[in-house]
Length: 509
Image (cartoon, rainbow, N blue to C red; front, top):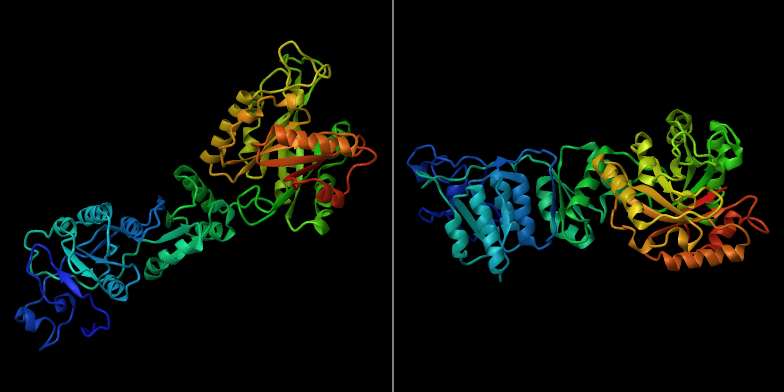
């Protein structure tokens, strides 16, 4: 290595020992031979090399985007220990990055007018690393807290840092915006790391592909605008699976999509168009319905099945709940075929006198599939003394929230992409306290599906009333009825033109 490098630190200290010339840090010194002019012919003694932190797939969220916290966070990600550090006023100072790269040591950033807490966080990192050498660039005098944090070991006086490669721990940065990416860039370039811009990891196809290709990389989310710590960790874990939802290249159920669904029960034409044909024909018909919307929207179209999994019954049945629960094997062929065809499935519950959570748990096996969501139909939720068709059913927010908690936890705990959860409604009284429904779980795309039928004017009135009633619900669905709408159900062009905001979910019955 050549001693006459273009970039060198302007100010260097070996703390706990005498201040020495910069040439002590080179592997070869000018003179008669390597080390002879400074060590009298003796081989120089070196500090132990930096110890890289193993690439163990850690997921770290560092909300602060200032360079001090960023530089310390990256040091923590990359190093178990280091005999030295570089402290500079900027992370892309060429002199500082030159020395950090030459000796494979951390570069920590201390602004010219540093706050006391910034001084403290760097001092703490110097202590954690066990660094005995602090090289400063662009700083006339290091703060005392950082100077005294350096702890050279016994007999380290006169030792020098050996040139070394940058530690090999791999990492990938996720940031929410281009401005933060520009701050992170110099650190990533030095390590050969990637910086990916994605406000939510599940929404970026590039990020999902990158993490799935290298699931062992340490991931650090940097700056503001990213999800909270728990949500960020779940989304990164899910991204590593590489699973993609139908209708796009990502794991967000709502990203640039419209779901167009056939509604009904397999093998039963009386309950909707889904049951009017066999499995293969149903898959084809769902695709036909969905792609009929292609001329009228730029959103991705997702052929979908809304399968009535538990059917409201006129009789109490053996369990007395006025609901016929479908056997899993009866539903499996259509659910599997939909997954193979790149289509989505929603399982609809008509629970009678039992509760929605009890029935949802019956279909946990299917809900563990990435392409399967859930719908709750309050019309068919009975009180203990009620039977169907004598009143319109209803459900309270407390019961809905038990399902939300269970399904969101199931999704998060199993690293699944976001799921759609639909609440069917056509009257305010069906979801009387919908304002208390938990909308905080990012694992779910909570959707109110407006099931009104009849004249189009009346349907629009119902749409507006329910939007006002359930203004806290982020996503909405619309239903077109073949026989009950008058004078006729909307065409795809009319549905897009007349229903505002554009529904996430459009179903046919």
